[in-house]
Length: 302
Length: 332
Image 1 (cartoon, rainbow over the protein chains, first blue to last red):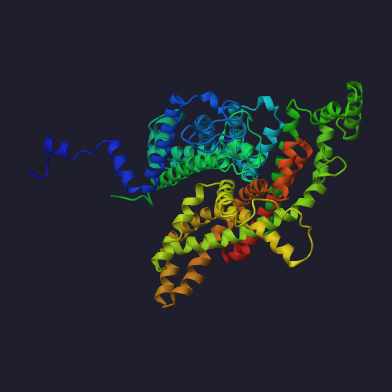
Image 2 (tube, chains in turn blue, brown):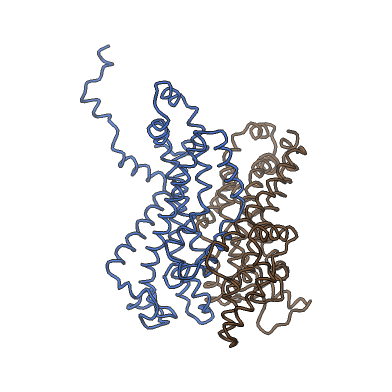
């Protein structure tokens, strides 16, 4: 019997490494996630360093010599309207990040709240929320966003209104995901035990169920950021964005309406396109990686 | 499929169309913009008639379009018009109706959309199935990876990259338009080839931009199906690899993908519209682009509503086809 009992120093040895170290080790196994995080960190570094070092006035028209190809002075070149594309990229990246995080965060928050209400309280509330989600889901969201953005006065279209337009029709996905997760959680034994021990509804939601759902919420958030960035980009490409701002989609719209390729100004549409590929690509990789993290069945062990 | 289910699906379709129409009806009325005033204000500036005349014109237009009647009456007429696909007049090309404009441009969009959707669905699903099939040669399985990496790239950006590399740098294919400048559309082979040459890049952009999604979901399906008893059974029966792949593995993995096709239709249509705008093809996308530029609100709303209805109807059709493919759903 004495061999079974572990002395305290040995216990300390088998203690698990910190969560951060575990996450780093997990990144080594989940290459896609690691790669996505790496690109995203690079983009953040580019934006932050750019915001501090580049003259941001050059992101707006008539600030530098027009139509200059990439050179040492203008690494990304300048466009037809006299914008320095490097400055435009820095500002556009920051605005894209703002729309993504703001719209994605708000959409996820609405989704989590509605999903919990729907699944936890059930009955007619659940029926109403579910039916509304199901009716709105088949409608191509972008087109409705086109109607909303098109109906706005051009002066009212700003980065914030863009984000709000995107949120308006983008909470159905997370609502349905969280709802189905809460439904399965509700039947688990630990929730039943908590209920029997007299924990209040709010206590069960916040202390018992919510912590278990964090990976799903994180995955839903990344997916929401992805679709928010995507939607805002499409609206801007159609010319419905705030036209003065150097939002990535706006730059492509402007390049397209000036016939950039026909005139040989190839860098003008190409630079924002590459930026967009990096943003969406990193988010897609992180999204796939988080799916794996949230779904233990396909999760790679050590 | 029981009659009850059919009726429920049709009712759902009606609800979706009603919801979309209502949103498109009320949103513009919440805004402070007045399409007629903007359009005629513009004409007044260029055409030089007085503000008093402008008010008269707007008043008569409001009467003609029924905009002076109470809102519920307008809404009721509007819903009735939607039923026979009447979306009103285009403001920019006034005597032409929006329905006529859509009818003109629809064949272009439909052709591009149909070909690219079918090709991307077939290529993506085959690649995805092969990627998850343990007996497939290694090089063939690795073939799917680059397509998966493309999932994050929107088709419009794919279009810009293709334009840059193939159209601008290599000069192999034209930079845009439906056919070469100065060519008159005729029923000849030379014109047909010219037409096709202009369709390759937009088509490629749409296929490359959407194929990754199919590869990814099919690979996921394939992995789960491999462990199923019927696949093991087929293997122990000594069937050839090709036979198992085709009849046992692919057929079962395809079923959820058909549902996926219905769900992806909306995205496919929106991508096609934006890519069309990029390449300047004379389809619905370019029509929408022009309408947005010209503030032609009735055309914008009409196009949006038409596409929404079309997508909802197509989704319902796919749902009706599903039981024909899956005997289990048919019997239950």
